[in-house]
Length: 342
Ligand code: CP3
Image (cartoon, rainbow, N blue to C red; front, top):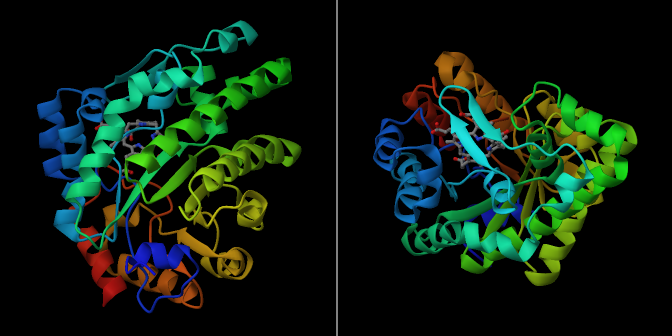
């Protein structure tokens, strides 16, 4: 068996000290990230320059000794590879060309074409597989189809995913065709990351919480299950982490319904509830409120210890409930790690 702690936890082992990494661990809260990003010029150039993307992936590993590194890229590179225009507006976030009808879905590029755009990402993975410390696990990732679709339809982040819900209501068949295309693209994209050296992959469904009832089954559970089944057929033994953010009660049973090896928890669910209802099916990850990385103090230490204790009876990877924000204090990350590793 591997001696990498993250892989052991993902296979269901309870460890005396949970392994730890952080969503958005390579990011603007780190001065060394801001320097490399300035060198790259803009965010997308950073994503598509393998040496620089590998460098920012390695920065938080050098500074903190996290147990996992997450590939530096973005969930919106796949829509770009499928033919959407993509750009980032400083201080505002991503912008994409919009898809408003069945013709827009039909005009997307075939799945085989994605590698033309995404090959630099695979090169970043190859560099990382060579350069990471031997005890550090390399995590690849993609957005889950629903979350990616919300950006492709609206052309930007939206507070309530209104445009995607409207498209789904107006033409459910065209909407389902878009989800299928993204699902197939995601299978090809994650397979290529694994072939390049990713040891674990994670699916980010940041907007899963806005899907209710049968929509949650059709567009959060079913595409995730299909992606995981395809990956397991091609790459047996490579664990998959699913992050259906804000799924609330639907976190219970999500691993069983999708085949995920671990479920990442946001900070809206209680750790005690999740220990009883989610961790019984396997590894859990997450739950620490990312705002504590800004405010720090005794509350950060107490909350970190509370989460470690709540999940101490089963497999657990320590993480935040969402990404660390640019205003976080890098010293608070060290405090969190000390509180975990004691
Ligand atoms: O976690 C990591 O360190 C790995 C890299 C990573 C990024 N984005 C880098 C990034 C990962 C895993 C993502 C995932 C991602 N991207 C998600 C899902 C997770 C989540 O946060 O809910 C989403 C929805 C996106 C889309 C996206 N990318 C948005 C909405 C934004 C703008 C908001 C922001 O934080 O600036 C981005 C930009 C982005 N992606 C940055 C980083 C480090 C900031 C870009 C910069 O340097 O200016």
